[in-house]
Amino acid sequence: MSWLTWALLSALFAGLTAILAKVGVKEIDSNIATGIRTAVVLVFAWAIVAARSTWPASISSKTWLFLVLSGLATGASWLCYFRALQLGEASQVAPIDKLSIVVAMVLAIAFLGEPTSWRHWAGGALMVAGAMLVATKP
Image (cartoon, rainbow, N blue to C red; front, top):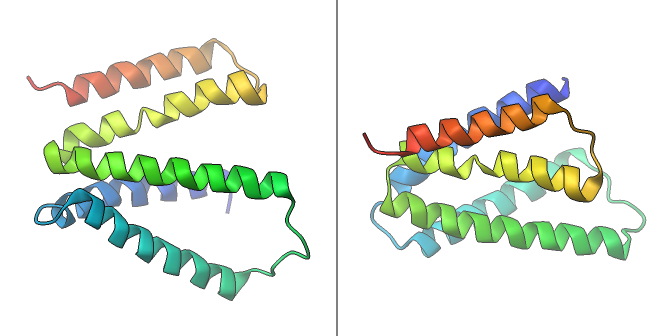
């Protein structure tokens, strides 16, 4: 499958996550909900690794550092996301959360030197405008 197929599947599952999490976080503390979700992701991810991957002979310290930092950022994101879902409507929280797309675009340009064009900036601006439109109560 191409990157686009995987990206579309990611969007599908992320959309499902918002709805399932909104229902799941309704009756418990958002931090406990995040802990449960994280445990499930941990078991699921390692099951996939066990079934499909071969452990590399070595993993560099740079790789470890950036994967640990990525994990910490994911954890912080999930904690904030679950609290936002507990306090707000899923149809408003999810679009604001997806502004991470624009953040990732800007960071990729700034720190990874990825190429950009007017289309990147226009698309990013439209995403921000769309998220704000959807997230604002009428």
